[in-house]
Image (cartoon, rainbow, N blue to C red):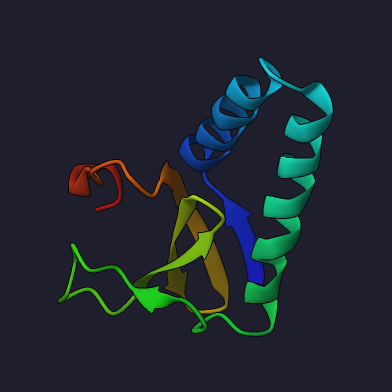
Length: 98
């Protein structure tokens, strides 16, 4: 499987990293490396994430939980599209991933 990050997902990940960098640039860089590395597992195991509770009828959209964040992705043929990254405590706007 090929992994493609949408612009929205990349922007959200880097916004989170920028927020972490307010306390520690080193930790922010570490977080970015870790999340991108964590997502790479989808190359071999695209269905390893759980279904998104807010979208019970969408079996093509799944999520991984990484630390305090949800990584929402969609499986299409031979590609996994990373749609967004959200803090686990935030309400997930369904229109952001539909």
